[in-house]
Each structure stands twice: as C-alpha cells, then as structure tokens.
Length: 483
Image (spheres, rainbow, N blue to C red):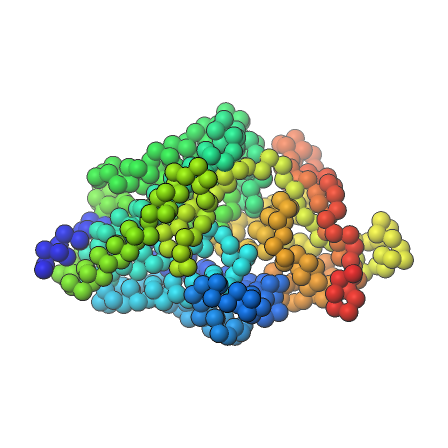
C-alpha cells in the first residue's frame, strides 16, 4: 500500500506547509486573545447580548458548542487560554516535530474551541472571516508533521478554499453594485470602508484614473487568476503570487481584521519550494514514508470536503449569490465575499454624555462630551490607526449601526455607558468622565469625509464632518433602564 501514500504525497511544498500551519495558528492565537479582551464585555454573563440568554433561547439551533449546557465567563476564558496556548505552541513549531497525529489533533482542538465561541457569538461573530478561520484550521489540521511529505489532497483543498474566497468575492461585486462594473467603486471605498487606516486617506486622494485601474486589477485577480491555482507549476505559483500581492495592497489600504492576512497565508500553500530555491534558499527536507492510516484519513477528509462542496459551487454561479454564508453547522466549505455594494457616503454615530441636568437646562445648553472609540472615526483631528489583523468588534458594529443595522445591542450599550460599566469602558479609547457615570447620553449622526490636501494643510484635520441628524435623544437611567 506504499503506492497510495506515494501518490498522495506532494514533495516540494515544505515552506508552504510551514507558512500554512504557523500562519493559521497565529491568526487563531490572535482570535483567542481578541475573545479574552472583548467577549465578556460584549457577550458575557452581563454583556450587551448575554450568551447564556442566547443559548437558552436558541438551544440546539446554536450549533455545536462546549457551552451548550452551561456558560460562564470563567469557562469562556479557560477555553480561550487553552486555545491560545495550543496556537502558540504551533506557531513556534513544537507539535510539528512529532508524529502526524499531533498537529492534526492540535488544530482540530483549536477548530472545536473556536467553533464553540463563534456559535454563541451572535452578531459580534457574524463576520465571514470567522467561518474562514474555522475552515482554514480544519483543513490545515491534515497537513501532517515534519516527518511526512505534505499531502497533495490537502493542498488542493486549500487551493479550493482560496478559489472560493477570491472568485466568490469577485462575483458578488460584479452582481452587487454598478460601481464595480463601471470601475468607479474606489472613488468612494477607501473613504467609506468600515475602518480606515493611516494610509486610507492617501489612497482615497489618488487620481481617479488610478482608482479605475485598481478596480480593473481587482477584477482580474479575483475573476481570472484563481482558475490558474489548479494549473501545473510554475503557473499555479505565479497565480498565487499575484493574489498575495493584491492582498498586500488591501492590507496597507485598510483595516479588515484578519481577512487579508489569512488569505495571504492560505495562498502561500500554492507557492512551490522551487520559487524560494530560485532566489537562493536551500530547501532539502527529509521525510519518512507516510503511514497508511494518515493517508487514509486524508482521503476521507477529501471525500468529506468534496461532498460539502456542491452547495458552495452552485452558489458561486447562482443569480442570488449568498455572501459569507455557511451551509452546515461546522462552518466548513463556506461561501465568501465582501463589499458586494459600496457605500458612497460615510456616516458615523457619535455617542456623547453629559453630567448636566438636561431636563432643567435643555439639551442645547448642556455641556456634552464625546466618547472615543479605538478604531472607528470620531475626533476629526485624529489620524486613523492600524489595528488589523486584530478585530475591534464593537467598532465594526458601530459602522453597521450607521448603515441602519442594530441587532439589539445598541440600547444595552447606552445603558452600560450610563452605568459606567468598566468592561465596556475598557473597549473604548476615551471615556470623557474618567470612569464616572454621566447623567445623560445621546447619539448623533454625522457625515464624514476625508479632508482635501488643502484642508489638511490649513486645519490639520483628517476628517471634515457635519451633523446629519439624531439617532437617540438624550436618555438617562430610571430604575436601571433608559428613559
């Protein structure tokens, strides 16, 4: 039966395997740290959308989770610290030095732990890159250890994931918004994306012909290049490099959590060792014969993935293509896509508080102080920051709130601010009341735009803003509830 393992082996992808295993584990490490820092405040026992209440209401519909019968913040933190520890061990390469079953087990544990979190994360974990991380962790589990050659079927499954990720994003753009089809999408997108970074304003102010070239290049990379991932080498490697460069462009122009970073990591799985050898690196790994049991496990995994691929394949070419959808409870072989429509005007919800008596003095004459968020625009003079691949979940939800999507968490947020809840305040950049509760809070809507070069020189501001309306009139607490 040695011929079976020989057929399934893919020698010449050792560097790709190392990048895949360590890179995906690094994203898991970041995801668990993010949950440690944010989950208790957002979804914990006393969070904005308490997980225990959701579990009780959803029951089995929540999907597989370790918290099905019991949730506590302490248990959540234990799960996160265990996951972070295992991920850190993989990043430094310890499980990979053992037999093939060791990294297999390590990644499947990471996948199961994070699946337990995502399935109770509600709207705060409703992002496509959560499913992407879960699917990536499951597939990378079957890459084996340093003892055996990388399995060919696993590398092909990872290319199939990158194909769906890229081609799905390209198709959703072509179907979703005319601005992608007429090449004008980037006239707006750098300014209106969920969380701009320090370079976003520079990209927004580029000449419009360059924006059109950016969009055309994006279409080529997402709609044409992915097919060549399945071509013989060196064509597949060249296609992978094109995707990696394009994703790097997105990394330096915006904050999209770990979406671009994990895409880069996964695409390295199609870059052969010969590319590194061509620039002077020496790569000469030695492998033992792949155990039959491991080859059989890889074949079963490939059959399972092929079985689950039918619906996602149909979705790619469906008239009503689903974006960032899971077709099973395990978040495997998902549908992906991003920004099927482009927001052309940026609105921001600004939350303010006051210690004045609004009922006595009136809202207009009261002194209002603005709460500052870490990533989303607020203070017009503050330069946008770089946070990706770290995911600021509350900031992202504030962007969706400005688009008209609440999800039931915003009123609880105002209550927490009126209570000066320390866990919520810790998620903010600036609390104008120094940990003390305000008497009233309100939420106003502003239209934001990047300053022109001339405006930046004369004012020093990054943004210009003008009031566009009121989302929530001044409210205070009465009996623990806003009134």
